Image (cartoon, rainbow, N blue to C red; front, side, top):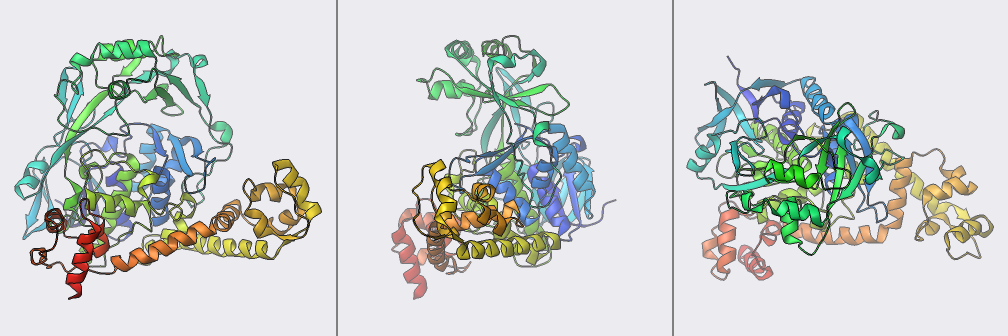
Amino acid sequence: MFPKYDVIVVGAGHAGCEAAASAANLGSKVLLITMNMQTIAQMSCNPAMGGIAKGQIIREIDAIGGYSGIVTDKSMIQFRMLNRSKGPAMWSPRAQSDRMLFAATWREMLEQTPNVDFYQDTVKGLIVKNGKASGVVTGLGHNIESGSVVITSGTFLNGVIHIGEKQLGGGRIAEKAATGITEQLIELGFESDRLKTGTPPRVDGRSLNYSKMEEQKGDEEIVGFSYLEIPKLKPEQQKSCFITYTNPQVHDILKTGFDRSPMYQGRIEGVGPRYCPSIEDKINRFAERDRHQLFVEPEGFNTVEIYVNGFSTSLPEEVQISALRTVPGFENCRIFRPGYAIEYDYFPPTQLKNTLETKLIKSLFFAGQINGTTGYEEAACQGLIAGINAHQSVRSLEPFTLKRSEAYIGVLIDDLINKGTDEPYRMFTSRAEFRTLLRQDNADLRLTEMSFRIGLASQQRMEKVIAKRNATASIKEVLAQLSIEPEEINPYFSGIGSAHISEKQKASKIILRPNVFLHDLIAGIPSFSNALESYTSESLEQAEIQIKYERYIEKEKDIVAKMIQLEELLIPDTFDYDKVSALSAEALQKFKKIRPRTLGQASRISGVNPSDVQILMVFMGR
């Protein structure tokens, strides 16, 4: 009934969709198996993409040739560039999405991707031959063979939903859990554990009083995520979000349900996300605060459904409603569905290589929440890397990996495989030590050529990168040569409270001043506008950032060069750590478990000291 596939992807969430698309676009014959064809790329939690560090990840996915940025641009209802008041390393794009349009666009793009087949079924287990994943066994009894398997099971592995004292089996509300895979993987020698996550109640927007809330509009300039020219909505078409707050009365009502909370009664085994806690967890952990911010987010253009971001809860339904109706603007709110917590199986990611292939079973890849992460963006980038490497392994090609100094995606995977996680992992800019290099504006300059070389990024993308690189260099040269007269620039300096100049100065030096921005100079100073009017805003911004932050960028590049020396010192797969008697007991245990590929990777393992790395280096030198 089924042919043999190159790659089978289990699960069609954000990770599964990116995995299927990347493997197929590289030339693999892909089967995407999902329990429900109607929920492909479902936004299970908030209807938004991007945000702090997450926006950088979406731009990196796009630069490599993934679909998430394109889908987001086609389905957004609001766009904001966060952290504009800070340096460009912190700028992070974020979009509110139309939940239904987002999923529909993903499915449409996948259906238009040659080499992707779909099948609606559950996967009960893997076909493993001679230590290699060779296919899957489905709930309908089919044995489907493949060259590799990517598991992107989300929250479905033995998922349990909690609403107060009620417990339901499921991977998402009204959707059944997946069983069989965890049990088989444990038999094969894998370690597994439990995590939890949660969602807030969804409410009827017609029942809210927005006059009691703060309006949060979108940006006047919509930059978007994709480096391709995707038609986007006009600024005036954007839908607003709103902000309101809890209060002591809300907190008191919520506390009345604590005795029936699955979290406080110990019915939930899994650890929840530290950085996105439930409302009851916030009240407990931050008892000194008398209010917490709530973001009131529309779910689309053609629905009245509202997502109450910040009110994630698993308390009994009647407590949720009573507490919500005490929030300003929610006095008469009607609930579409209650908030709930869900706990599920995951596999500690120290069991993976940096390609996301498992160490125990060849050609078996894990991506997304199965690796202990939380968030659409974190899942999507893992799916992209797993899909690429599933294709590469079937073809016996070189693996595709990213260093910490090359991408936020590299930071995420490196953190997971070396440090593991015992709580849902979320990406932040603070996790990236080279964030001046890993900006959202230059993901294409960093990554597209690497992807183009393996055949994923298109010729069109590569040509755009070359044009941007050339234009940026040209602008920098123009600014280095352009001299500005004092009488031309001093009125501008007066307006921003900056010191006057008394003699001609190069434009590139003027750009270095704080509070001096190239778009203002082009708008108000004829010399700048005459010299630069033919360049795009994207290239102008890139040149300005490179000029302003050149010293910091070069400093980070120097650190990266030193770090790469350790990365190039390979540790043989057969290396016997027991022979290195001087290693600390913890380092010995971690090295034997994780089996780092390089001394650089060894140095980043949690619990390993610099002295352990030096001992290893000396021993290998001998």
